Image (tube, rainbow, N blue to C red):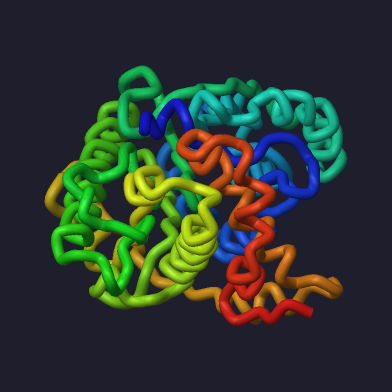
Length: 347
């Protein structure tokens, strides 16, 4: 599987689109805003730049794509007014894999800019320039020493490829309690290679004194096979696929060769790679937790289980279609085990 050519969140604004099923991701961004503001404040206070280049890696599409950009611009405007400086020109670079729905982002820009202008106190703020940058962030994306501020949220847990030599991970699609010992080791090794490459590339692209804020889907335990939010999600999908296998709806070879290119690191694993690679110092390294079951129950909706299933579908459909074909999608997401996501019962 060529992950860079296959993986993308569901496009558009329909019922199963990422745009309509990424409220949890927005909640995560909102939780990290104090850290984002602190990082931008430190950057601006030390440089007072006349121009800023901001990159958002793994921007996806929909409501969240420009949310952090809007907040960053407001932060910069507040800082420059406080210091009495002229508003800096800001270039915004939006990155995701080539299959991302960039068109939806670009179509939303006129209304975004109009809405942003109405929220800013100063009428001479900006100007702001927006560009899409398709490509994998596990390689170079930008010119040397060109970035001042980089943000990435809910993206770096995706790997550049499915780990090699895990053919014996039969009936599983990820690391599970029944996976052979070599499987979690292979996933961890792939994460180490990928994150180290990411850091090396960004070190080339960022100016001296630049700031990064990276938010991972992570795990508490040092045991990667221990059931948590992400493991539970993939185990439920595996249950649905195995149910289809038992009924002859998919073949055994396809089932046994499908694995998710996804790894949720622990805090110590993230720190270890940053220290080992050596290009960046760590200002803050924190763990926050969202209880998914509680989160979904916040919705006043008659079918919470369907919302949860659509959330899985919005991120996993492209991988499933590439491997199994599009004929299985409606069937796999109608399996009863998907609708019991994280203990949320079917009404």
